[in-house]
Image (tube, rainbow, N blue to C red; front, side, top):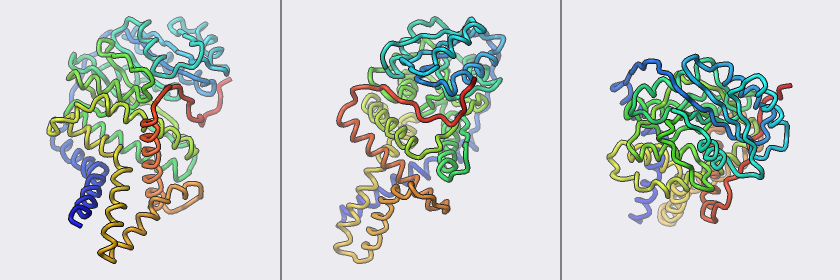
Length: 387
């Protein structure tokens, strides 16, 4: 019985730590130790690298948001790696090349996956900084400048953009997903201000010194997390740049987001195996943040299972635990309610939490089976095409 109580309490406390205590601790500490630093403008040779597959709905708007907002102090080249696109993506990019000589299309024959495309594009470039960005993330007039400014500090090797999420409808799912992702940005901002680290750049947009770039291993899904951790592994600084604002729409279909989270989960466990040595010593800033911000979240599905299992054992000796068991079973089944329209925000938060953890669990199981390809299909875009 003692073991069952220990497993139950330990599981619950770890979930509370990663979702509540760690963000609260960061918020308190960042108010005490707020870091403000100014940077001087430098001249940079930078390359924007974009992996694209069938992005005809958004690629023109994306490229114009980059090409029309290039700072005068930046010599910018833009490379679009088309992963054997079958729609009008290549034609749109080719047409834009007539207007912008610094735009380059690299067409890949046969699907290869984002990581391979980015690696191949990086091999072609000889620049100071790479800006890696997704086709559906739109820049504003200051994005490029704000991403590059911090490289005035030689110790800074990577800069994460502040990707603001936009909802295209009033659906509860989109609002909750936006709230969750905005909270993630606040956590990254606090980590950056406190320790000059970010545990995982968001792949939609970040900049990295070319000298710090390391090719992403074959069949890796989370290339952005790999890139972040390999920089931290070499003691480089990774910061979150709040002023480097860009925009991304949230998918309005729950199943599209569910599939995306499964892919992310596969990549999570790939990176955990690769960087497991960075989990110790636990009092190290990177290790503490890695455990608290990421690893405990990735294992939350198992903590939930452990909690239910230990509760079942305890219910055979304590009748009051039966109600707790029933509650957990109902919560485990809550993702199925995502197919229905529910107006309760509290209930939707619970559904989102278990929905997300179900995706994590499925991703883990697929990781165990083995990853033979990192080829991806983008989530359905919520935008209208450009003519």
